[in-house]
Length: 245
Image (cartoon, rainbow, N blue to C red; front, side, top):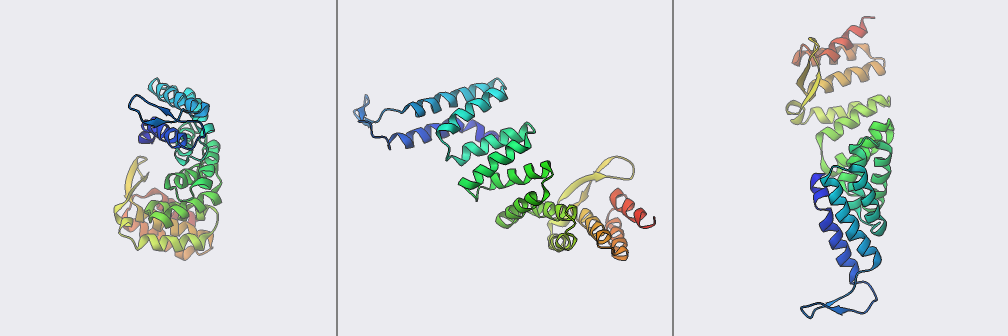
């Protein structure tokens, strides 16, 4: 995201340069005798706005930077890079609805933009729109094979009560070496946060799915499997305790 912001002025110069050759105004010669077409009013505005954007970032003026970005985008509406930058700015300020809208517009221009897909997934998840979050995390997984994206899919499917689909994806995840290598932070029994292999959370999630399906025996088996690996994993302990009630 920082790289995108730092390179925005260069991007706008490229957009302006590319557009300037498409104009119908007569060419002018520069000092070197080369033919050069004059900039349009829109291109001049884009360059000015890009400089304003960089200056606003220098002084940590997020609102000013975003307003300048709107001016650039108004003259270059087909730029997926500008829409990505805008969506990132919304995301960083916690404006998830605006981030989702900007990232959705980005997807209309470039459906394969990985950053845009991830932004939509995270924004919809934060908005509580689980089905759209699942769709985008699945798209990201199919395009990249990213382990944690599929974990997000499985967890959100549990929240949507799509227990069998969640279990299918958990089986895929458990078959991967990353299940033992990727670490995630959860609460332990002593009240502190601790890192656990993600396979522990996956077995626990299978137990939660089993409860949802009404299979208490399977739930007990999965919670106990999680505790074999991590005896102080609080979620599995709580899951087992719930079966006794």
